[in-house]
Image 1: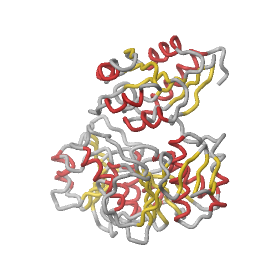
Image 2: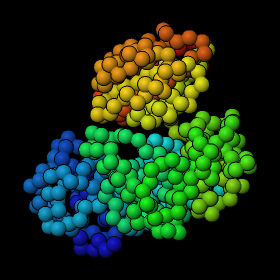
Image 3: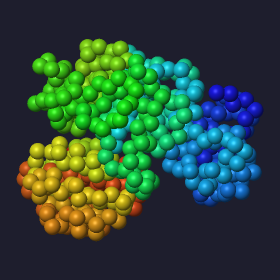
Image 4: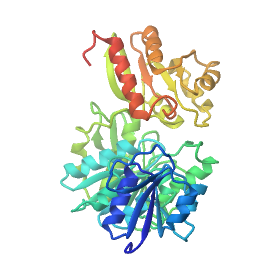
Length: 440
């Protein structure tokens, strides 16, 4: 990609926007400017040309040759399209980085499990002596990795539907499709639109490349060769049985006693194994490193166990499917804490799963009334306003042998900056509530 003497408009002043601006500048662009429609926006790098509060007038006046858009901004919005008045194409930060990255790419998408799988693949590769960097929607912006010198052998790239909307030539060597369920209905008009955005991960791949896919996923005529796994059925190259990953009748990895032993993390592990096999690693280079892996925070994370009650933080659960997976993975009676921002999701499909597993549901946040109306007829449901109030009620109602599962099932933006802040709040309140009797 030749950026010499070109004017590049970068939309969005977040970390990916800053990284894209640096990469475009380093590759010879005549001028690079970051634009943000928020007048209060602040760019973390004062050395970059930055215009907060930019409107469509400023967009047209810049007359960009290329527009690089951050994933949180819709490419077909009038403000974004105003930057294309001189005929400039719009691409995303991932597409820009792809055009300059010379290593091998393993890309991971799915409604849930992307981050854990991305981190696990990076862990396996680096433990096996390869250079690898987790990037994209998790870890570093891909443009930072493309700008690094030397570049790593592998970019392990978590890609969201938002990032895939703006690819053009992006083509991973291995693509991992973990699962698909309704999400982001505040961004997409239909579930089909969301599905097609995620399906673009396979768009440019060749027949000799590998798609690692959970068995039963409805993928329509994709080009790369599919290899499947499953923790819930006997189909696929790898399956999960009695705590072990199996290939036919042969044990591949024993996950019992590891941080990956629950079914949803077993699926992430199988996907990681197949992806690493696809780039040439043997099971001897893969399996030993599963035991010492710890999933990123806020994903069914242990918080405390006191007075016979287990407390788990699954704040990364930002959709229905992730809460469903968290509920399925538990064997104890559940006190479920769920709630947050209204994303336009229907939570009725959770009800059959909750029967017999969830004995008490505590709902909070902007969506609490909808959740109380949805769950109240089938499960005892208590409505509160905040996370601290939910923890207090859970502590009062918990019995020996219960698990208190904080799995909000929607985004955090009604009360928190992000899911991590929400999860930290939950953990801190739990520890303060149980103190001084617990040391965890």
